[in-house]
Length: 118
Image 1 (cartoon, one colour):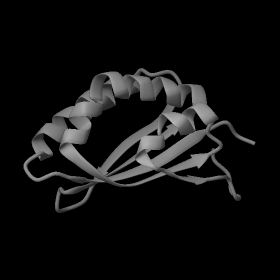
Image 2 (cartoon, rainbow, N blue to C red; image 1 turned 120 degrees about the vertical axis):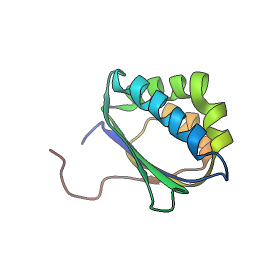
Image 3 (cartoon, helix red, strand yellow; image 1 turned 90 degrees about the vertical axis):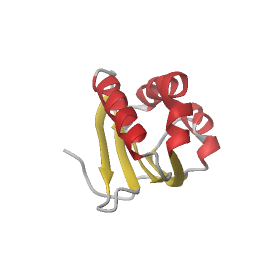
């Protein structure tokens, strides 16, 4: 059993917010780069520049909570001003504290079914 927690967060960029969102993304990527326990932090955008997927993977629930605290304190208000969330799925076995911290996003939860990670 792995302690790793990951997610895929999908959103639509609000009209006129792409430049602000790109600036915010750059700030968030740089800040997340130095967070302990952050294993993967990748943002993807479609060709129309209006739909973004963010894939994140963390060593454990403690790393998720650390990231979430930083997001809430520094970025959440600006982030939500730029996008409309469409889907949020969390993978692994997140702690009850992680589930409570992200409950406002109404995520789907998916436990490990099979496979491996290197």
